[in-house]
Length: 169
Ligand SMILES: Cc1cc2nc3c(=O)[nH]c(=O)nc-3n(C[C@H](O)[C@H](O)[C@H](O)COP(=O)(O)O)c2cc1C
Picture (cartoon, helix red, strand yellow):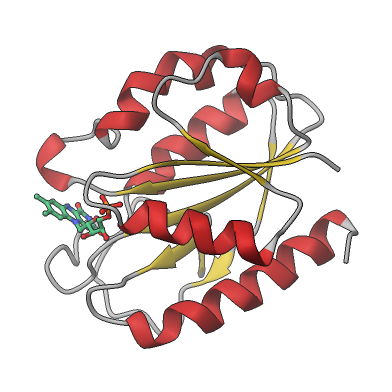
């Protein structure tokens, strides 16, 4: 299975997590989202998409993803799986916690992908998030500002979950 990690962030946190994920999933290729073309996305069977959230940018995506918006919108992802992770700060932005994952989720679904790696919303302290459906986030939220002591365990558990969901070990 071809696995690609695509990430866009503004101050380095999403990139650091992408690097850690590439160590945990050592067959995965690491791709900064800036400057990709549509074919780069279509080259994988499982795409792990990471973004941070930037409330002040309204409902737009994080800026690297904003530039890649059309690529993702036009990509043919039928039969492919997409897993999302999102960086956010639940104390400073409790009403918009990891909202950025929602936009990526909707684009990936519209492009034909099926979403894996949903994550229970227990053990977070937030008020509202666009990236929640029922009791589950659409992907893995990480908050390195307030809960960094949980990051490594969350990543390890999530990677095992993804491997189980796609049937690889
Ligand atoms: C101006 C600004 C706006 C932010 N808006 C949000 C937000 O709406 N929701 C959220 O969960 N986190 C928000 N954050 C927190 C960032 O998403 C968080 O710091 C993240 O780790 C940054 O990752 P990056 O370095 O990869 O961009 C904001 C941070 C800043 C500085």
